[in-house]
Image (cartoon, rainbow, N blue to C red; front, side, top):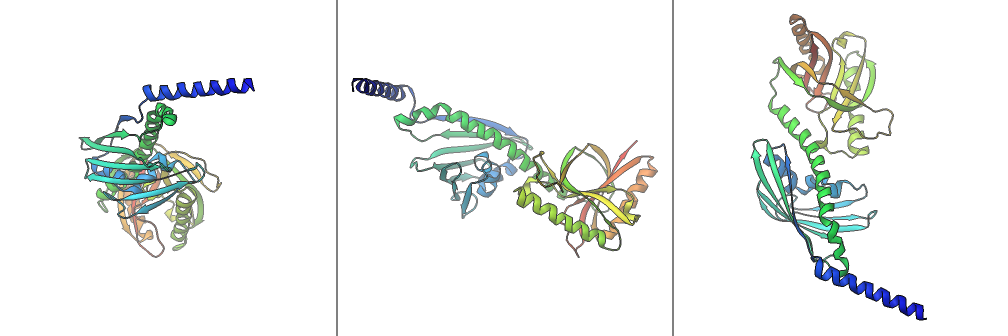
Length: 346
C-alpha cells in the first residue's frame, strides 16, 4: 500500500510539473508562415486552390490516403464552398471551408479537424513574381489546445511544412500536364510543317500488333485507348489533369504494311508500381521532330506522314519513329485531331 501511495504521489508530481511547464512555456496555439515558389502563372495556380475539387486532388493531406471519403458542397469554388471528409483507416474526419476570396490574390480557409470546435485558420496569399512564376505564402494559426495537448505544438509546424512540400510536388505535376495541354491547343496550326525540340517523357502504355486492313487498325487503337484510359483513371485513380495526351508510337512508314506494331500510352510524371503485366513504362529521350497537326479521317493521316518523311529526306536527315499524339480522344466513327511528330537526326 505504501508503494502504491508513493507511485501515486510521483505520478501526481510529474503530471503537475508537465502541466506547469506546458502552461508557462508552451503557447496554447501557434502562428507560422511558409513560403513556396512555383513556375506557373498566378491565374493557373489560384484555380487549383479556390476550387476544392481541384485542391483535394493534389493536396497531400487528402491525396495521400486511399481510404478517405470526401463530400463537396456548392458552390464548388470560391467563397462559401466547403467539403466534409472522413477517413476510417486513419480514424480522422473534419470539414473545410473557404471563408474569403480575392481573385488571384488571397484565400482564407477554415479547417475543423475531428471534433475540435476551434478551427485551424489558413490564409494563403498569391504574389506573381513574373508572368510564369508565382510565390505562395501560407499564414497558419492553429487552434488553442488544452494544457495536456500543448505538446502537439512542438511538431505542428514541421508536419504542416512537410505536407506543403509534398503537395507542391503534386501541384507541379498537375499544372505541368494542364498547362502543356493548354499550350498545345493554343499552338495548333493545321497542315503546317514545323520543327520542335521535345523533352524526355515517361509513358505508361501497351504494346500491340494488329491488322492494317481497311479500318481495322483504327478500331484496334480505339479499343486499346479505352483499355488504357480505364486503367489509368479507375485502377490508378488518376484525374484528367494528372496525365498528358495519349501517344501512339510506331515505325514512320509502316502505314503500307499488312500488319502494324505500335506502342500506345499515356504520359505520366513519375514511375509507379503497376500490377497489370499488360502495361509497361517506356522512357522517350529528348528528340528533334518535324511536326504537323492533322484533323480528319484516321486513314487521311498518311498524306501528312508522307510530307514529313519527304521533308526529312530533302534535308538529308535520318528519321526514326513517328508519334501520333491524340489532341482529342480517339472514338470510332469520328475524325481524329492529332499531332504527328517524326523524330529526325543527322
